[in-house]
Image (tube, rainbow, N blue to C red):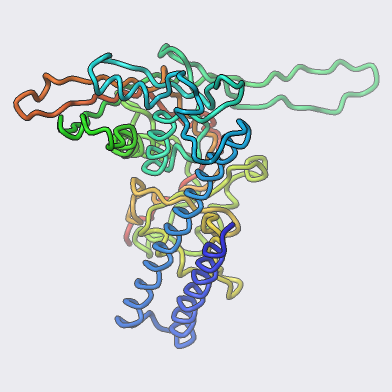
Length: 400
């Protein structure tokens, strides 16, 4: 890990100490933050978020560089060689994109492939699919924490789950034991088709210096990511995925006096409303939007003076009550009847992706504008498979 990341993490920790001092000063005087203090607190929060994004960008770049060097090292080639040179004439995803650009082919499918084989028997990363998915994950945090299942076809995928477990009992000597079968159910995942049109001028399309694959990845990944994030957060399952909020179970309802807002005790109660069978597993965390996160940063537990929030270090997510927080812009802000906070085993949400990504190109769609149109298609669906308490929500209480 670079020294810069460590310095930025320390800078972030110092900024959080400044924010706590503001809150503590107002708390000691039994008052809310003044207008000036509130503006300063908001500025510090913005700095916290900006520094966090900078740390993540640096770590992502370091990981990409490390992956490239690892591939080159395995192949025993000089660092100056590029992936197409290493592959020694075997078509790469970028080769396929160039063929789309030149008109040699009109359609191509990019599937999830961790590696491609080179002539020397080594392997190098593929490009377009992974780059689109990278931007998709950046725009859709639900996909980042969910369990992702990929299939070749788009037929309905039934995921088995148990809604009640077998039970044991004491049986006397020579007595008959009673049967106790688990209660099983299935959750069905379809494959809704998401399509985005990306246009590029013919002049740029013919310019060999333009990274067309990277351009496609950014535009298509972000567009599909934003669309799927909304549906996979609050979708009602009608001609769209069922969102994780929609399928979550009730955990805590706020007091009427708070008019939709949550308290520190509400968050503590929500954390402990999820059973230890779930919280002992990897992948447990919180999900909320920036407005809710700003409110959560100000909260302390009622029985002590410790803040519930702790900033993440070295690119790790921020934490509430010792569990990571994932920010999701598609979550509702705290309000009456709004499900503004989730907590639980987030990988219990399953995302199904079918048949990879399909890219089609047309010179005729916008012929009069002299642009080339790319159509990127992804077939996907999402559902909280375990709906027996794996993920629970806080809902704002009605105003008194």
